[in-house]
Amino acid sequence: VLLGPTVLGYINHDWFAFLFPDTGATAIAFHGLVTMSVALLLLVAGMEVDLSVALKQGKAAIFVSIAGVALPFFMGSSLAYGLPDMFHYDGGKDLLPFALFVGIGLSITALPVIAKILMDLNMLKSDIGMLIMAAAMINDLIGWIGFAVILALIQPAVDAAGQAAAAPTVGLLGTMGLTLLFI
Image 1: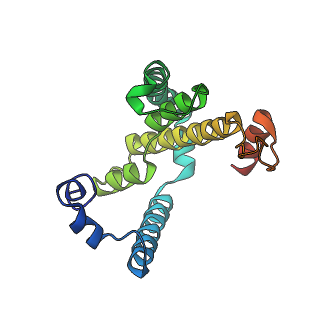
Image 2: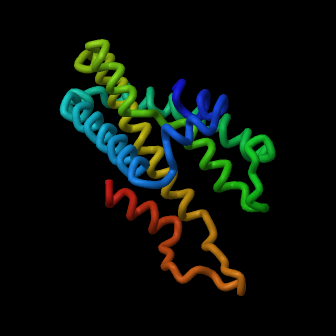
């Protein structure tokens, strides 16, 4: 955190740019290392989760997940919709997808972080650890489906001549169906 853009990047942007360049071989290597680290963390966390124990949590996991998603989602989307200037929104009048995006972004969990914390505390295989992991998995599932819905709501890009992009669209229900099929 201290070496990131929040502290070092704010205090001395030149040092930050020297340590973490945007281009070149160092940037590519650093990005590869970060990607590999996240993939390995997810692999280790996934190997530790006993899916049958997580599925036994059933109604409790669903209730915890929905309760953990609902309040941040409604607060975030309401704030983004009611006060778009606070979020520096300048996308015109199509405010609903932006507000939904903010709400979902604030309501989903960081599953790898939760898994690592539970592993460090030796709580991952406990009943409460499995409840937390099951709820976080459901939470992420809700988030990915929500992001698919937002993508379906966004209007296609328009070029300088006023022509819509030629990319095929499947609509809202098609996007939701394809997302569920992928999952």
